[in-house]
Structure formats: structure tokens, C-alpha cells
Length: 391
Image 1 (cartoon, helix red, strand yellow):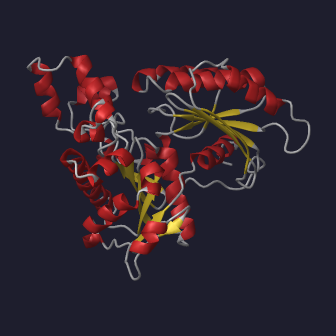
Image 2 (spheres, rainbow, N blue to C red):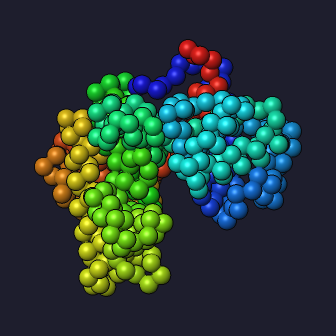
Image 3 (cartoon, rainbow, N blue to C red):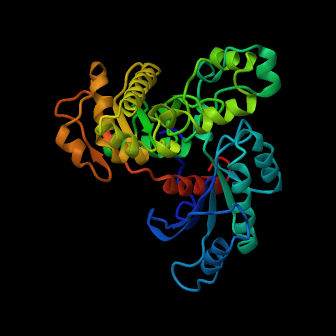
């Protein structure tokens, strides 16, 4: 499939994966057979490169003298690559500067990714580090999918285009689905991957390439999420701003942090957690029931749009915290997608654990539940970034 690399000397490198989130930090060491040999989760990371727990873990890895030994490469998840970074990239001073220049597009994540790079460099100064960009998988979007119908002067001056996000998850899920269904060499395999969590997005992946996705210039676009609105009429936002109904700063905060399931369900504390919303709906709370209905409606519509971008689909994949653990969400989506050939077996859907095929017998479209493994995708991307040009 496109994006696969030929065998090379780095294909079995032991990779330290550094996944820096907006408030947490996940570190793991991935061995040559995709086995996790070590792990550390910093749940409340303050974003400092000298965080004691982070430094202690890196020092422990560096002090290893026997098998499996210290890491041979380091892969960093970096949320935004913009148009600068569209593939795994060896990190040097120029790349660090480029990552920093994109901070305005991902202000919560870029500085923390850079802090992770600084921390790793301090302990492993000669180990190659590779930036693995969440936007890179969507760099293959055709122009008709990535271009906004805005004034050309705006697009050119501000670099306005659809970037898409969750690319590491979508890349892994689409390739894993192809493997499980025996389509690893097929350039025609069409899969819609649904990464459903606090942040959610869909991707249409045709022959291993992203050809459409739901998130856009920012991660606010597309599906209804925990606290993000998803797609909203831009005229509505312009109206609120022009009428001085909502201050501009409050508009951005409201769309990002007070909308989505949280805004719909109206739960105490403003929770947008799908489990809490589902529990409230089970208690008969009308707002929570509406929230589930709006979520399902948008999800069904977006899956259909992704399928349309490929003239159909062969498989539908659910991954991420909601996608993996909430059978009711999967069942509701499948019920609205019968016209596309989607059908799930109730028993398989209810009992799905790990990677599972939940398709009903005879369904034209296979439906899978896959464990999200961004760590494996980062390790794979890091190894690819070590390959010489053309390797």
C-alpha cells in the first residue's frame, strides 16, 4: 500500500515513542516486532522538559546495559506539520524552528512536543529523533478536498486549507483493517476509519491514501465531539461576532470547550464524556437523549460523505475510546448506514474486545472494532524517517 517502505537497516530499530498531549505525556519503547518493552505515563504533565518523572524515566532507559538496551531511535508525535512537514522527518535545528513556527495553529500541543524533543536530546544527544506529524497522513488529500472556496488572496496569504488531524490513528487503523481482511496489496481497498474519542474525526482511505477527512483547518470541524461543536454554519459565527452578541474571545472558547456533547447534554459540571451522557439518557433526561441523537445523526452523515468520496466502501472501522468501548454508538451508526451495506451482529458488537469483526453475516461492508495504536504507528513512522532517500 502507498506509504509502505522497503526493508532497510533501520526496520528493526528499537524506538522510544514520545506522545505529548495537551496535559499528559505517554512514553513507550517499541521493540522490532512491535512489542512494547517499557512504558511510562505522566498523567499530569506541566509541559516542562525537566519534569522530574520524565527525566527519571529517560535516565533509566539510558542506563540500561543489557538487553533490550537503550532506544536506537526516538519518535515524537507532533500534532501539526502544516505544509512544511508531510512525512516523517529527522529532527534538527531547522525542523525545530519549523515546528515552533506552527504554534499558532496548535498552541496547546506544539510547545509540549518541543519540550519532549528537548528532554530526549538532553539524555540521548546522539540518538536520531524523528518527527511524526498527525497532519501528514492527510497531505495526500486531492486539491478538490483540501481547498476552501474562499478568496484566493486569503488562501495564499494565510495558508488556509484543510489539514485534517488524527492522521497517525487513521493510518494505523486503515492498514490494520486491510491486514485483517486480507487486502494488504490492494490499491482499491476502501475503508472509512472512525476515530471517536473526546476529539473525533473520520477519514476516507482509498488504497492506503487519505482522500477525505472531517477535521479541517482546525480540529473543531466535522463531528460533534465532547466539547467541540463540529461543523457549524460560518455565517452563524459571523452573525454572533457582528452583532456583538458574543465577544470574539468567547466565540473561540465556546466552540472549543463548551459545545459538542457538553453543550447539548447540559450535565452538571459541563461534562461532555459520552459515558456520562449515555447514562443520563438512560435516566430519561431529554437533553442527553438529544445529544445522543445529534451525535448519531452527524456520525451517520459524515460516514456517508466519506464513502461518497471513494464511490463506496469495503470496510467501516471504529477506534478510539468511544469507538472501541461503546457498542450503542456503533449500533446506532450501523442502523443509519444500512443503505450502504453496513450491518453489525448484535452479539458480536456487544462483546467486541480488542480487534474484532462485528459484521453481520452476509453484510457487503465489513465492520471492525480496532484498538487504537498510535504508538505502533509512531514507531513505524520513526523507522521510516531513518531510511535514506529512496530507501
